[in-house]
Length: 488
Image (cartoon, helix red, strand yellow):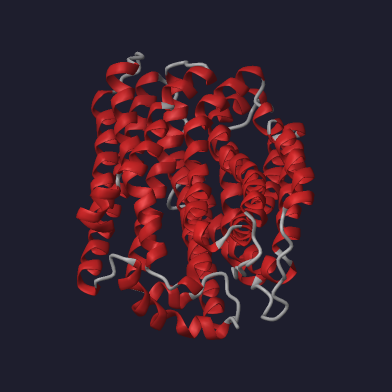
């Protein structure tokens, strides 16, 4: 996504713009956490629904968001960031109302797909609008403030979701309506009107459809494997179809002038290693998040509010540890610090495997693991995002950020699908304990693989001297030059 600076940006105007975009980004991030907490309540409301069908409430959103994030950013470059942001916020708000009114799981999933389209439009344009309204010397602080919104949403999401579900699960969507309406009214008045980039190719929507279908088939194959059987024709066909569509997507990305993924970016070693680690870690993180919600509510019998309170300590650790991790980052580098965070995360999941029992014992069983995983997230995720960003030249910051976010969304889809597949439908407390232990082992496997790629990242940074933006830019500039030329 291309960002054009505004030399006439005013501090007061940037504050007003920040409030508008922060509200929109906050509710879109909040939905990622409060919908998880609401999943068991949805299961009870829609009689006859299964975890397999309800998983698409999470995965449908993540798939569409992942596939459309980059094309939406490119489209906004052509039509204007302000109009795209307001359209995205309006669609996100309207689809939130449709989610709340959904009479069945199918309708709810359909509304979530529309919600994802709105989120894909507003997320990249929100940062572009903020930077356009901010003076150049203030932009680094504006970016940090924008990035912190996700951490705030993560900390508040479980508790707020629990409070809303206590009233009715539909409130996790209705809460978006006043925020969205206020953002639209204020946005029409305060958002800047940067000039759209009239030239350049249209984004590759066919490639986005290929990617959507590939991720969807992968998720179907994993989610349905328990019911259909791993050796069934439907599971094998779904997984094979995902491979074929992915190959078609990569081939199209290599040839299209404005692809969903600029493949030359993946030839930047630090960028590739950081994104591979982030994808694997997000598989583990999404699996941890879903299993902790389901364990608390379905096995220990916690209410939604109590579940939110039980989950909150981990996310609440993320902002302060992230802010205080600067000295560690300078001492260890991105790769080794991410590996340290991943080991903390692994220790938290291993604690659950070793200690959690079907009789509730929060303080000695769930809480220590929640704290360890919170430390792990704080040390890992911001570090990997920073490593990916500093691996690229400034002309590719926005595009690289979108690719990183897309990869994390794909990881979330795979994580949810793996957990749903492994959990199956246990019919006793002991079967549930065994199933959750197997799911946590799968989470550990993903995290261990992420440790390996983090160590690769550390080795690449030592070899190339790409631990800082200054060291990374020359290599990255050379690697992405063909992509830059093709997108002009």
